[in-house]
Image (cartoon, rainbow, N blue to C red; front, top):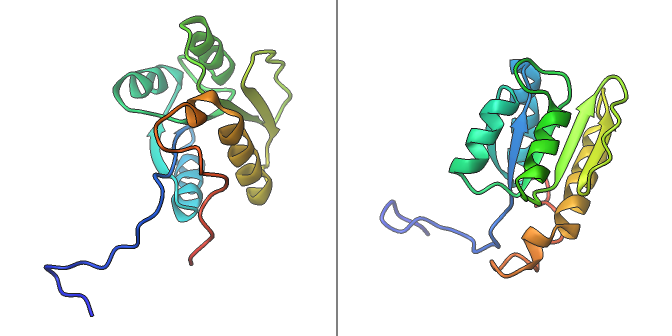
Length: 148
């Protein structure tokens, strides 16, 4: 039995942090909820410029971004991350095809199937050197099972 002074916590590995970059608030929030329910930590940004600020201020393991956004689009965000030497994996989403030939960048067509999205994120994180070089995350293989 737990008391307020002794909360019951189950030890679990550190879960990855995903930055959701989407200018449509409803879509951004739904993506964040989906990822949080799967056990990910989530940051949100409304466009590529805000995403760059977030990456500079917080540890982020993967960027999930819309392609078409004001100020700085998703493809340009991915290019800027690569130009500055940041190997963070990026998953771009769009209703239309966007050609982006950069290492560590994957593309998903909207509407996105939730299970497919989660599979792509898990695969990108497994393949990411950010996730396997120290940091105690090399045992992580997939998101936590859905609990609700």
